[in-house]
Image (cartoon, rainbow, N blue to C red):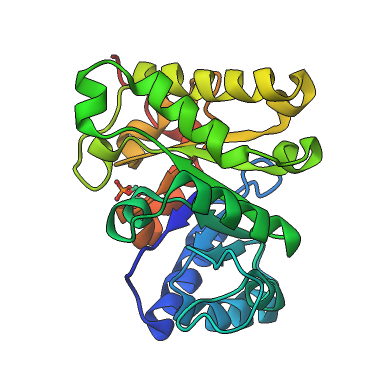
Amino acid sequence: MAGNWKMNLDHREAVHLVQKLAWTLQDKKHDFGAVEVVVLPAFTGIRSVQTLIDGDRLDLKYGAQDLSPNDGGAYTGDVSGAMLAKLGCSYVTVGHSERRQYHAESDELVNAKAKAAFRHGLVPILCVGEGLDVRQEGRQVEHTVAQVAAGIEGLKAEQVAELVLAYEPVWAIGTGEVATPADAQEVCAAIRGAVLDAYDADVAASVRVLYGGSVKTNNVGGIMKQADVDGCLVGGASLDPEEFGGICRFHDMPVLPG
Ligand SMILES: O=C(CO)COP(=O)(O)O
């Protein structure tokens, strides 16, 4: 379960949220062996979050929301995978739809960022998903599978086995419009199928496929029941420690009909 905080929370607020999240998980006896919990602060919060997690030996992982495809040099404003690895990051999202939309990130750039992450021992959370127009045309599977194929181009089997692919239909992000569990399963199964076609059954079984888009405690139960959904990438709800803590306890959450 990964919380993408997006451009929210300064470094002090980041520490506060991690403290509260740790308390609520501890209070509810969270099974960290069964459900890995990851927070993705803005760059400015990572150092403080690292200090807290290391200092208190919290069983939380953390990462960044983006990285440069380059390893260092004259790239003003960019942050390299090496810098994130030095801060103890485990994960980094690449190709989030907000990066694709507001920074015109292409599939080629997303692929280069995924490779940069692996060069520095970071696991990319590679985000894919269709917009409303594509969904209305019924082309969500072909669109998303093409993004996956381009995103994983040239990656080694052992890298893809570690990779996280996040299906985030753009029309469901921050809108309150959650995909139905069946919608999520349809595309997540196709994503795993694309990995099977490109690699083999072991890699397809090992790659983790997340769903993201308006995930809350009241819908996570149904989404996580789906065979090809291994976890969720949570935006807005991850800023509320009680709500995100509840999402991490998805086994206890209601599964609503439909
Ligand atoms: O973009 C998302 C996570 O990366 C989803 O955001 P919301 O959960 O706010 O819809």
